[in-house]
Structure formats: C-alpha cells, structure tokens
Image 1 (cartoon, rainbow, N blue to C red):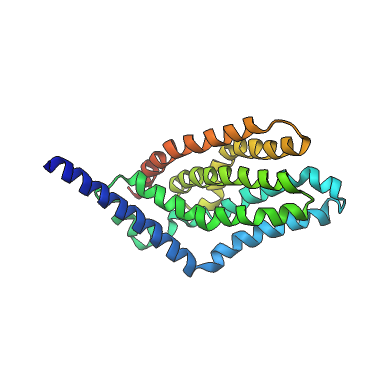
Image 2 (cartoon, rainbow, N blue to C red; image 1 turned 45 degrees about the vertical axis):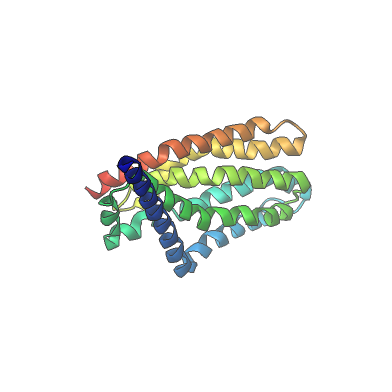
Length: 235
C-alpha cells in the first residue's frame, strides 16, 4: 500500500511540476508579446510578398501556395528557437530545473508545448487566411491546416534539441538553424506533398500518415535528447 501511495504521490508531483513549467513559460511569453508577434508578422509578410514577387495570377499562386506557406511557417518557427532555453540559462532557473526530482525529459516536453502554443498554433490558425490569399479553397485549406497541425509540433520538438545543443554558444542562433534545418526537410516535403496531392485530386493519406509517424517519433525521442543536451550545455 505504501509503495502505491508513494508512486501516486510522485506522479502527482511530476504533473504539478510539468503544469507549473507550462504555465510559467506561457506567462513569460505573454509578457514578451513583441517576441511572439515578430514571428507572426514574419510569417504573414513572407507569404504576402510572394504575389508581388512572383505573379498575381491565381493559377500560379495556387500551385506554389503549399510550399510558400510551409517554408514561411518553418522559418517563423526557427526565429523563436533561440529563446526557448536562453532566458532560463541566463537567470539560473535552468540549473534549478535540473535539480528537481523529476524526469527532465517530461519538463522539457512542457517547455516545448508552451513554445508550440505560442509560436506554432498561431501559424496554424492564420494559415486559412493566407491560403485564401494565395488561391486555395475548401478542402485544400483544411488539408493545409491538418498538415501544419501535425508538422509544426515536430518542428518545435526538433528545434528544442538544437536549441539545447547550442545553448550558451556564441552565434547560437545561426548554428541552431544549421543543425535543425536538414531535419526539417522531410517534414517540409511531406507537408507540402499532402496539400499538393489534395489539390491534384490524388491520394494524400500516405503523406499524413508519415507526418503522424514523424510526430510520434519526435515525441518519443527528442525530449530525451534535449534533456541530455541541456545537461551537457550546463555542465
């Protein structure tokens, strides 16, 4: 009985710590609205400039819309990676987190979720408007949202590992981009491929299945890798 009570207490403590980490990061993000809005404005501006630089013809824009929106979302996500752990590292709270009697990978998952809610979810919610601006309609817009909903968490999870590896390194912002960009390419390919297949009337379920597989794989592996990278960076 005592072992069961102890296990239950540890689980409640872990959940409380995880929730506290999530709430803390969301609260700090709301206090730094300028950083959050910078990524959103970047996303909107990049997508909006393509009709001016490529062609105003809807047929042309419709063909490039999935790739344009996905590339803009990828770059906007990369803009916010540098501050995922940097502030905690500077004020010493990261060292305190490492001392908690809870699995660091679970706490990292809370920080990644906060990052996605602030920088990834808004991109998903804005994508229908930008899709319509580039000529997408109906099912294509819905499919675009689904691919971003599956893909942007993968970007945050992979980006967290890159941000942890470059923590405290001079020029870390550029270095993290070089580290994570090759790993982002499969997500980009299958995200845009699903929307292109939907527009062409072809089967897109295989692309969505692969995106889902990437998400599951990232959830299982990147928190552990990020936790190990944080310990190395702090030491």
